[in-house]
Image 1 (cartoon, rainbow, N blue to C red):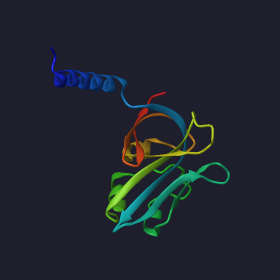
Image 2 (image 1 turned 90 degrees about the vertical axis):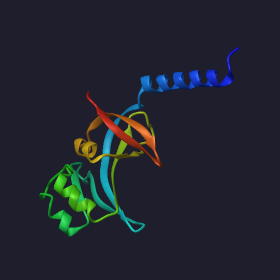
Image 3 (image 1 turned 120 degrees about the vertical axis):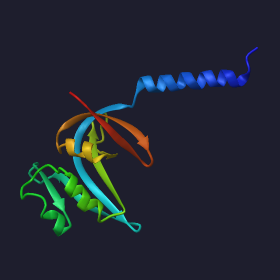
Image 4 (image 1 turned 45 degrees about the vertical axis):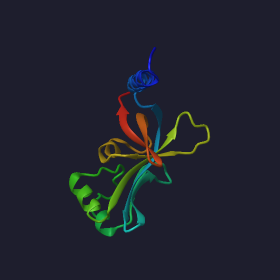
Length: 149
C-alpha cells in the first residue's frame, strides 16, 4: 500500500515537469507605448514616455531637462544605454521599464502593461507587432522574452 505522501510527491513532480514543458504563455500584439517610471521615498514619477505623436510617428517625452538633453531631437525610439541607465537609476530608489501592448486577442482596443528588463525594453519599437512570452510576478505580468517572427 502506498503512503499518501509518496503519491503527493509523484504528483508534484509530474506537475512541475508539465509546467516546464509548457513554458511561459506566448502572446502577440502591437507596442502601443513604452515608459520608464522611477520612485524615491514612496513618490513615483514618469521619467520617459515613448508614444505615437498626433501624426502617428513615435516620439519621446522626457520631463527632466538634464535627461532630455541626452536624446537627439526627433529621435523616435527610446534606447537606454548603460550610461543613460546609470544616470536614471542614480536618481531613484527603484526604476521600472514598462511596455504597453495592444493584444491581438483583445477586442476592446485597450492595452496591457508589462514590466520588463531594460534589454527587452530596448528591443521593442512603438507601433511594431511583437510575439512575446510572459510570466506573472507581483501586480503586473512581466514580459520576459521576445520571440523571433
